[in-house]
Image (cartoon, rainbow, N blue to C red):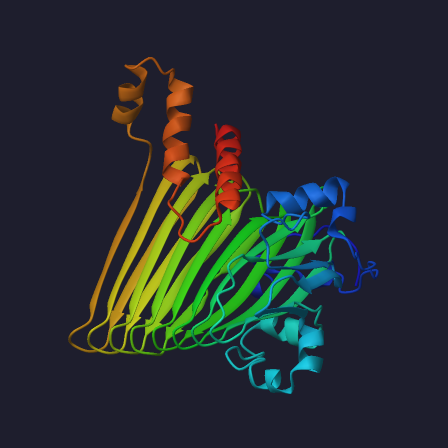
Length: 397
C-alpha cells in the first residue's frame, strides 16, 4: 500500500480512495495489567468510556490496530474473547459468523472478510444477569491504517448484558479507516444494552456494518454518541424484530463540526405481532453535514413504532432529516416527528432576562438539547458523557 494523504474521494467507489490505506501494522504486545496502560492511550480510552481500573466492569476487550492487547472476563456468566479465540473455542460459532451479513454486500464487508483484523466476541450465558457492563475498545494508533474487524455479540435466552464500546484513535493520528462488521443476536427473553462512543481523528473514515436479530420477548437498546470531529461516518444498522413482543430502541447524539460528514441512521423491521420500536435522534450541524436517517418497516398487524429526529443548525452546513415509514398490512401503528431549525431567540431572551449573558444562554440551550435521557447507562459513564457534551458545546460556540 502506498502512503499519502487519506481523504474521502466522492468520485471513488464508496467514497474511499482504497490505495491510501495500509492493512499491515506492527504487533503490539499483550498487556496483562490494564493499569500498566498510561499516558495518552489511557486518557483516550477513558474519553470513550473505557476504564483501565476496570471498576464496575464485568470484562474488557482492547484492540490496538490489529493486535488484541487485553481480553478477559471478570464475572461468571459472561465470555469475552477475540473472534479468533472464540472460533477456536466454540465450533458452533461458525453458524453465526456472516449469517446476518453477506460479505459481498459492499466493498467494506468484502474487505473485512478478505483482510480481517480480529474483533470481539461477547456472550452472556442463558439465564445469567451480568450486572456490570463489558467494556470494549477498538483503537487505531498507526497513521493511514485500515482496521477491519468482525464482532459478534450473543445474549442467550433470558440473560441480561450491557456492552460499552469505545472507538478512538491515538492523539497524533490524523487519518485512517475503520471498517466494523457486527452481528448481534438477542435470544428469547434476553436484554442487551449496547452503548458506543466515537472519538476518531479529523480525517478518519468510519464504515460500520451492523445487523441485529431479536427473538420473542427480547429487548435491544442501542445508544450511539459521536461528538468529536471525524472525516466521514456512514452507518445504518438493521434490526429485525423476529419474535412476538420483541423491542428495539435506538438513541443517537451527533455533532458535525466543519469538514465532518455524518450519514447515520437506523432501520427496524417489525416482523412479529406485538413488536415495538423507537428511534430517537438529536443532531447538531456546527459547520458540517449530518444526514439523519430513520426507517420503520411494519410487516404484520399489531406493531407499534415511533421515530423522532430533531436537528439544530448552528453554523453554515447541512442538516438533512430522512424519516421513513413503511407499512405492509392493515393494523400497523407507526409515526414520525422530524424538525430542523435554529435556536429559538425567545429562549435566549428568556434566559437573558434572568441575568444570563447571551453566549452562556446559547450554551445552556445547546447543552440541554444534547442531553438526551439515554437509557441503560451506568452512572459513571453518564457523568462522563455529560462532561463531553459540556466541552463540545463550548467548542461549538
